[in-house]
Amino acid sequence: DASLRLAATIIPFGQRLKVLLARDISTLSRLEQVRRDFVANVSHELRTPLTVIHGYLELLDPADVPELAPVLGEMRMQSQRMQQIVEDLLTLSRLETREALPDEEVAMIPLLETLRREAVALSQGRHRISVEATTGVRLRGSIHHLHSAFSNLVSNAVRYTPSGGEIVIGWRQTADGGAIFSVRDSGLGISAEHLARLTERFYRVSSSRSRESGGTGLGLSIVKHVLNLHQGRLVIESEPGRGSTFSCVMEASRVLPPDHGGIFRAE
Ligand code: ADP
Image (cartoon, rainbow, N blue to C red; front, side, top):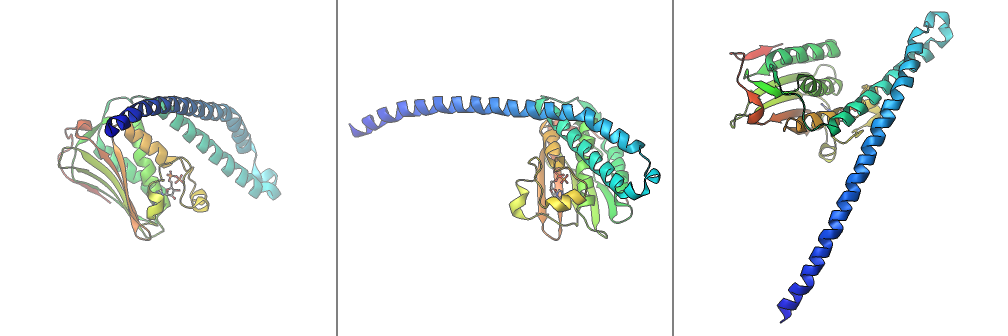
């Protein structure tokens, strides 16, 4: 019977395929482990020499060698940048090996106010910055990691929004009991072809512009990892030339009752 013969040939083939696939995945995960260890070791080893170089550069007084002052300034800036890259790589390596983060009660209203103050300091009066919180619910998670992830989105909004633009930091509940932290800006925006790749390490829409803005290209990868460890998702909506909204969507299981009654608005 033709259909039986066909089934007989398909089944062993299917089994072989499964075996091959299983082997392939184990090789891949071994390679992934090697890559992770390599990045972690290299970053760790680079940390001490960089600290020493940076320390000595800070000790040199440009007034002693005025003709070298611009060179010294550039060296300090670049060594600081290198330190930031190494720190971000270490942060990413640590996040990759974590299975869970501390379960703390994160009061969002004070955190939103802190984020607003950080944005104002970074913006130096170049943007209109406000907070719009329509809920006082708190989050269950790591205060340190959530702060750094949200802070990353806020600093990106400032860095990628030209002077005169607007930035709104939001906190609201969803119909299913979850909550959304968002940062909306009226900045450069991101075209569709880049959107899906933004959270990859070192991925940048324009490398020269990002370098000027002082980033490492690792910020959004860190954000994504932190959210994953909180069962959250990063949603990016953007229109080139009009601005972007980065939303951290948190599940209801991560939301704690409010400790703050009213609606909060600050400018
Ligand atoms: P970087 O350190 O380069 O800012 P990130 O991982 O934080 O790295 O962001 C990756 C890239 O995404 C940035 O280089 C930039 O091109 C783009 N990007 C991030 N946030 C925004 C934003 N709010 N508006 C426009 N582009 C953005």
